[in-house]
Amino acid sequence: MGDKAWKAFERRVARFFGGERNRMSGAVDQLTAGDVVHGTLYVEAKHRATLAVDTWMTEAADNAEDEEKVPVLALHRKGSEMVLYAFREEDAEFVCIEVLRRFGWEFE
Image (tube, rainbow, N blue to C red):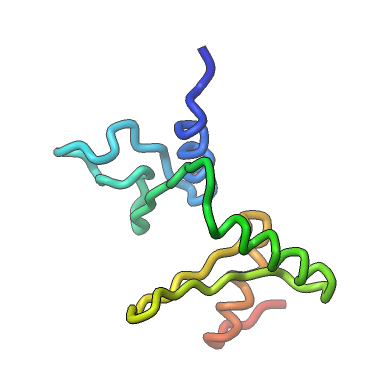
């Protein structure tokens, strides 16, 4: 029998972060309650049929392509201090390098 889509997604996320899928996420007495076992990151993977962020990213990606740029979404709920940044998996390395440059890191 094939893997459930959400389990396959959790594996993909775990591979991306260099971790391992937590088969018992949310259970007591585990290394982490998160979906991915990782030494320094707490990772929750959300697999849904629809996401507003998907629509927003598609629009941003189309506009970014016109300008030969990489799309990044900044998400903020009115009244909250928290800002979330979203980018496509394929753009992760580029975006992370750009952020690190902002903090003074140098790359060749």
